[in-house]
Length: 242
Image (cartoon, rainbow, N blue to C red; front, side, top):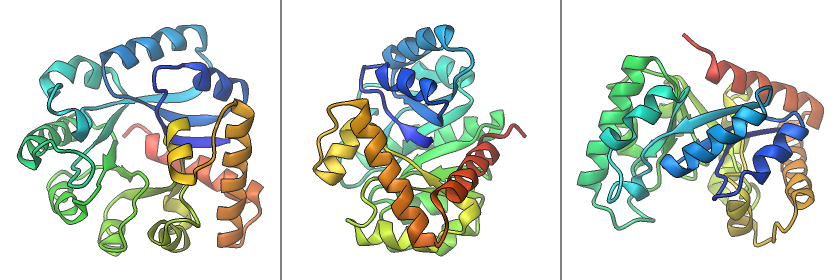
């Protein structure tokens, strides 16, 4: 199993479940409280193949700054998710840009890969990251535009639970080269938001993620096992230290 980007929403239970399944993935730490909870969990699960990312999300720039999160960013192997959002937040883009560019600069200087949030600002983010060469993972990209331009850079793209429901996500799943593809849930709440299906138990999560993998494999003409192997290799390559 792979879950290349997910949030815990205050509950480390999903982390424990994934560790028990020997799953690989990246858990997002969006603030100091989440960071502390995840680090405490990691002390009891040192062998888990779960990497931690940290970053100031564009939804949080009204209450967090890169400076306040810098100690966590310095420790995190991955910076993110960070980016710009012109759709789902009222935070001014001018404020978002300051936080975004600062974190991009640190990620470049510290040689850390980046997870991007690109809602409604796909073109501007593309223009911006060209100034900061790095490895980028654009999570749950749902725009029909600029994909070919992003692929000219060192970018990976994930398919989320809206596969088959969102035409742009389905088109991306069909188009992205296999060696740039990842699979994510974005967390239990996001599965429910995207699919309308309740995720009351971790068995529900397993069933929905297994179905998502199977549908993506069918779309790409592969067996689920072969696709899972490819996705794990892609995640390992994205995370590799320079």
